[in-house]
View (cartoon, helix red, strand yellow):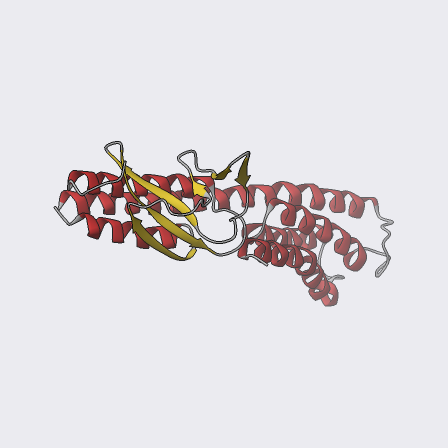
Length: 249
């Protein structure tokens, strides 16, 4: 199971279990606690799940909170039935507020992750540019890009191969897609294909080589990460072209 799927499964489990455990913990004080305060505590549990999970996990957590609020914290206890009108209204509000707040928490987490990711991408691209500006050898630029690709795309490994097109491998293209162009058949991948994937390095219209990506099995990285990978390869190509190294057209 990939890291993404494992995380999603864990988030769904937390969405089911966390509201249950919180409601169960409130049982000893439920007669001293108003329904509104109990509902607010459960909303906190929903937000906590949404902050680490997905939109689906947030929805499941909100539904779970409403169910266990009914079962443990409203009369008749330990039954899925509510007799008091105010408790019914509170349960409905708990569900609605839980859904809204959980979705806002997921959106805020994604925005934060985007900001952090953009900053890391900018640092990576600036690092390559500085190496070229400082007159470092094109080999140093290529090696820097190779290391950045491993981290950026979460690869098992990556190597650079000069001036050869041996084998017909799937390719990470400029549009961020991973394609495999074979006679009579073109395949676009949503997951990493088996084996290596090439990322070609071109500078000044000349082909200099390719990075051979060795990914972990699973979904492709986010599209933005793939665009940055293509940009890094282009910077490596520019460094090789500026140095005037031999190339293969």
